[in-house]
Amino acid sequence: MASSMRSLFSDHSRYVESFRRFLNNSTEHQCMQEFLDKKLPGIIARIGDKKSEIKILSIGGGAGEIDLQILSKVQDQFPGVHINNEVVEPSAEQIAKYKEFVAKSSNLENIKFAWHKETSSEYQNRVMENKELQKWDFIHMIQMLYYVKDIPATLKFFHSLLAPSAKILIVLVSGTSAWDKLWRKYGSRLPRDDLCQYITSTDVTQMLDKLEIKYECYDLLSTMDISDCFIDGNENGDLLWDFLTETCNFSTTAPPDLKAEIVKDLQDPQFSVKKDGKVLFNNSLSFIVVEA
Image (cartoon, rainbow, N blue to C red):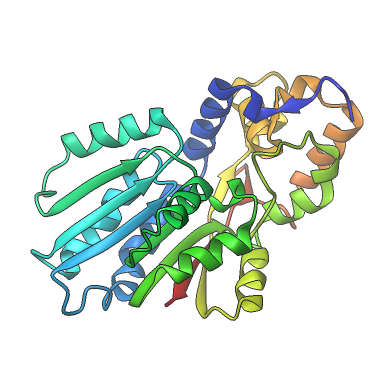
């Protein structure tokens, strides 16, 4: 591995920009939207039965865009019921954005918000130490399990916090996505970072099976337009390369043979489809619904 290659996470502003390009060039948000509109109402239909308050825990809630959509679906299902929404998020910057978003939003009168600037494992340790094991009606972990060191312990812990008829929603890339193939084939040749693990829904469902925890898994197709990755010196393409490989400035620092090999694979039907002159990388998502 070329010593000049370094993890994308070592350059926060470049990571944030490459993530923004990923969202702009992918159907990730539309895919989430489809799930929230079509599937979520049925999943949360029973979580607030006969309750005067619904307790929701958001793990890695980011800037709150998805959280507020989830809350609005819960409000539709249980009109007028008080909601206690707690957010565990390690980034102060994201929490500040979340608070701004809440301040600008309407129809939140019956929702009480609390934010905890910590990782999921810091939250777990604090709750265990203080013996504050309160039960939750809905816990969601959206695109965050990659950043957890001990995933089985995390799954087991949060499962133990579920009230009767409560659910956990886990969202991450599908085992059928091209991410799985990319990581398996090239993970060992890319700069690794302690902060992030290569895992897909296949790994998580295997862990849940071992823990004998009941779940259902839904897969939805999502794609990312990576056409710009094949144009030398294209700024958007370069940032998408960084996101795909989790490597800072991959296009300019990667050994040429490694880049050539990945370029060839990314155009293979196992990774992408070609449609209307575009190369669309398979970014399919899995939505795992864990039962109490």
